[in-house]
Amino acid sequence: MTDLTKNAEPEAPVEFMVRAENVHKSFGRTEVLKGIDLQVRPGEVMCVVGPSGSGKSTFLRCVNHLEKINGGRLWVNGRLMGYREKNGRLYELRDREVAEQRRDIGMVFQRFNLFPHMTALENVMEAPLRVKKRPKAEVRARAEELLERVGLADRKGNYPSQLSGGQQQRVAIARALAMDPALMLFDEPTSALDPELVGEVLSVMQQLAADGMTMMVVTHEMGFAREVGDSLVFMDDGVIVEQGDPRDVLANPSHPRTREFFSKVL
Image (tube, rainbow, N blue to C red):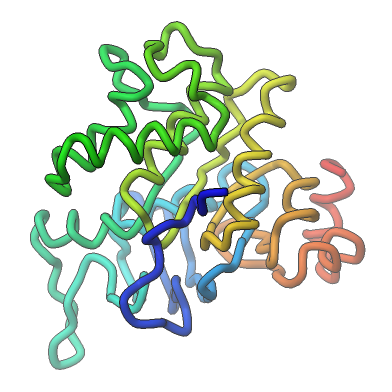
């Protein structure tokens, strides 16, 4: 069986794949993140849960610098994300340098964001061809391997409009993996799916976790968090209210706000 995380390990081991220190983010006068501190170890699956508007997705987008933080520090795979630091001051990297950093990070969104004019195979091949400039035969072989792993070998010639939502999301996962990321970010990857299609996407994510991929997953799927997650973070109003082993936090939350939330969703 081929490892989904092939070539995903950094050249030098790092203690934390993601490290956030006092991360703040505002949109205008609205402070969305109010000082986030957390660490994700290599190979860890961290599930982030909480009510809508709590800052979960914003934080995930800050991890790969799709949103620029207003304060604090974020490191990914041992590198300060989006900035260089000199004499205690931060200087934003050029777009090309940020794009280089993002090669270590795969992201799967709520909406699949596939190129509608490309087949499933072409969608998976696009970034390695254009960004990494890899030989086409090598990229095609890897893309076919990834589509097989997500259960879509027989759909490689289909366009997104010919695929179900669950199939499109699995193509999106294969596309992210095609860049051989060290870290995978999932932003509510099943929230746009019909209920009967959720399981096929979660099973692919579960296999990824079993293969050792480091993952941060913003999700409402508490069963997935309980069964697959190594750690669980509950966010509300821009702060981390509680975190710990998913089975402990879900079974016996210590904070009143966490208890209130889980009483409504479990």
